[in-house]
Structure formats: C-alpha cells, structure tokens
Image (cartoon, rainbow, N blue to C red; front, side):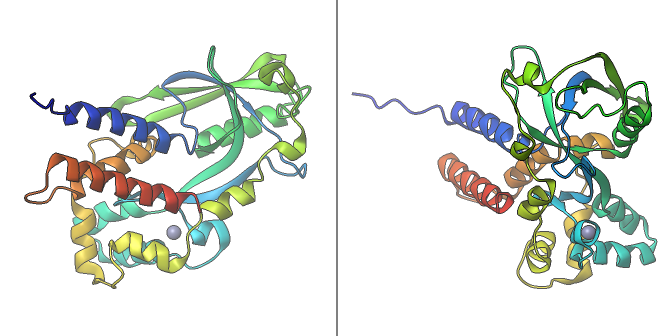
Length: 284
Ligand SMILES: [Zn+2]
C-alpha cells in the first residue's frame, strides 16, 4: 500500500484563508464601493464614538491602540517616533510615516449586507467618515440617525483614488428604519458593547508594546529598530494598508518563520503557533 501524501500546499492555503478572515473580523472594514451600515447609539446618551490612536504597521502584531492618545499614558512607539522626527534622514522619515499614530473613531455599527448575517461590529472610522456622520446628525432634516427606533441607515462609500489613496463619502438613507427591522429582533441599549471596554480589552501596557515594537524583551536601540522598520512593507499608501493591516500581520508571520531545514509541516505549525499567540494577545 502506497501512503498518500497530504497536499500541504493546499492545506496551507485553506488554513491561511480561514485565519486571515478570523483576524480581519476583529474590526469591521468597509469594502470598496457602497457599504450600508447602521451606526449604534451610546449607552450613556453622550458620544456614539471614542477618539482613539492606532499604530497600524507594527512588525508581527499588525495594529495596536496607542496608550498616549487613548488614555494619556506613555507610549513606547510614540516615544520612538518623537526621536525619529528629530533625525530628518530619509529612512527616519519613512519609519515615522509607518509608525506614527493615526487618529481613528471607534464606533459600534451593524453592517447591512443582503443575505449576510447582521450583527454588531466595531468600526475604526477615519476622520472623514466621522465628520460626515456628525454633519448628518447636526442637520435638523436628519437628526439623531443612531436612534434605535427612528434612526436611519447610512451609506459609506469607499473609493479608490489616484496614487493608491482611499476616499470616503457618507450619506444618510431617506427612509427611517428601526434596528428591530434590521436585526429581526429588539436591541436594547444595554446590549450594545461599551466602547471603553473595547478599548481596555485591546489596549496593551508600555512594556508589552515595547516587546512588540522591538520584537525582543531587550532594549535593542535605535539602530536595530531602524533596520527592523526600514524594509519596504507594501506599495500601497497609508489608507489602503491600514485597511489591510490584519492581513499584513499574517504576511509578517510568514516572512519571519522560514528556517533552514524546516519541513513544510513544521513551518505550518510554527505559523499556527505564532498566529494563536497573536490572537491571544489581541483578545486580552
Ligand atoms: Zn502611541
């Protein structure tokens, strides 16, 4: 009897596809074109968003919330960016653009896609979408579009602009729709996730972020850091890579893993372990 060898390449493809979906699913990312969503109201009746800072392109972990912007605490990544800004070399400028904190607005949304399951997700909206939403809400013709009963769905259009940049536009639907109509069940205010809890769960401490930044427990200094972050990551410009950051983090794992003499299966296991580690890290 001849033993049938497993097609590892095929398994690896399936595995990575499944994993990349799993990672991407942490935050909702709009598709190119029109995306209909419902923005959910805050529990306390105050703001329906939290302004957060995000470091998007860290080697290994992909994205992390910035403790300086989110909680007014020290951030090792921002500290390095501050240092690099003084240096003014082209490599320094390149790394600053990669590591500098990006402002985002965290909100609860229900993406509405025909035939797809409708559930509450968290969205890290760029400033343009956030401003567009505020403008709609402040327009007396529309008012509080987040209201569970009398609110409106909005269309977020994501457009690929020239030079790899991404533009967004936001408009409200004319018809008022209840969230019950969207979900097919009642949604109570207290069932909407608390945005501060979402931040606290994801936000890592100073030392933990430093380990992610350097890829080591030791303080390796600026030279090693520059070497680590000066390699070109992607041809895409900021906005695009931001939306694909979770996928990029899978690529980082792939890049980092191969070692001499490692079999394909060992490599797969190493990738799996690395990803499990990442997922554990992000679920804290
Ligand atoms: Zn920071």
